Image (cartoon, rainbow, N blue to C red; front, side, top):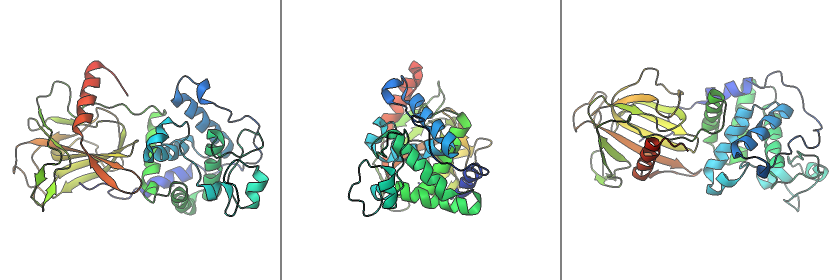
Length: 342
């Protein structure tokens, strides 16, 4: 497995360019971001209203705001329950030396050099209010990124690290933004089984079993035995992070989804047309074909029966660790058979 492959910082440049020619922002109309979760039947709709409103006032693309927010959400289990998960760290929101990291008027926050902002005109910038939280992040990004260009690209990376405390966000967040831009919506968490309906296969739930080729290690995935050349599908929405040869995995594809899970497809016989680093995929898109490649230099084939090695890894902001994909695969298979989405 080789998560976090070639850096995609060039993707960040496209986001920065979207800010070129944007107008400056000043006082905000009261109630402009006055959106509450209980007023919306769909949390995605409520979030989208917040993102679009923040874009209108700061000219930071809603896709970037959604990407930053989703990245923050992926790092914390409780983040899924929040309307807005991203927030400026307390010293950045309230200012270093401010005796209170809670709600305060902007004048006090400015005095201590903080970046917290009042979004709804109630007189207070509240780090626990989703509106104030998102607007503060948006204005901070806008200030740091300026008018775009190479300097803005570097500033975006620096700003993301300050907000999220995670250096890898610079590579992932712009790709999240591209996913949102491609599909134009937020409800992008549907899953499917990794082989097409009706495929003949045997799933061997051997996660954690010992392996010896390449040194003593455990099997960080499951093996799905199927006829040579069977289509292999993207399990969910995401972007291709890695394509190519791996000594253990042979021809493999790595896809990162919006939950910050890395999906690892190995031992392929080949790749589907158009599969390359940066490619945006949707559930069910064919990415390659079952084979028996790996366990040697590029081109090594046939050291084992044809099968798909499928691994699932989670990044939590500190480490990336393998999780047993078998329960997820079974659940996705049941849901697909029932026509359900998630």
